[in-house]
Amino acid sequence: MKSIEATTDQGQMVKPRELIEIRGAGPLTLSERRAFNILLDHAWGKDLLQPQHTFTIPTNNLKQDGQTNQRLKRSLRHLQQTLVIVIKPNGDEVTSQLLGSTRVKPNGDLTYSFPAELSDLLKDSSVFAKLDLEVMKSFSSKYAFALYEEISRRINLSHKMTEELDVQDLRDLLGVEDGKLSTHHNLRTKALEPALTEVNAITPYQVTILPKKKGRKVLGFVMGWSVKDISGMKKAYAELQQPKVGRKSRLEGTQASVIDC
Image (tube, rainbow, N blue to C red):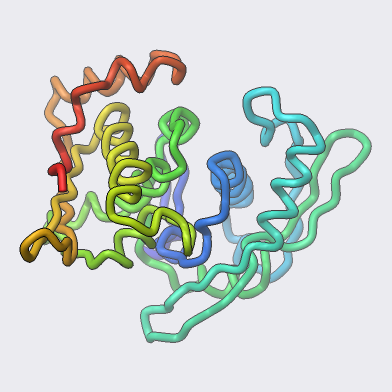
């Protein structure tokens, strides 16, 4: 089945692998990542395959946590200015912006389009993730947001439940910006641990990322994933209903999914 033909339950969206496994999205903030997904979900359907087809959405659907019009416009410009790299199955390397032209109308509607390169990428896409919209809105870490998308894409691979990653693979997977968190300690404490803690707390998935070491040097990582049992699902749902404020303190001591290294 092609990604564009996939159906979802209420409260879900489809995101093709080609738009998850991208390089260069590190500078995007959490709110910008959410906004892109909302725009993609709103446009989802056969019209998305038509290059530069325009879509219209109320700007209120995009505003998050009291976001002003000016902040939203800055986020849209950042999506337009961010160049990402997508590797196609045949090895072709495609560079594209994430968002095409936009127009904010006086009535509060936003008209927007996607670059032709992105539309072309989706024509033959057949691997995708189904994302829960409530979960997507509930993350407080952009690294957790990225990890959730990556695991959602892998969770239905019946033949595979682990994957080996080198350090750059992990940085790309978490969406860590080039030049940031360059030491292993900072990568672990600022990106990896917060991502694992939040994904394991509020999603249906249990994820582990363990280091592969030679002496004291970390050579890479082994990532594993599974679907939680009923008890785990209930705990995740209960935490999902709690406010994001205070989550860190509620979850202290639960970071057992990554070894101190």
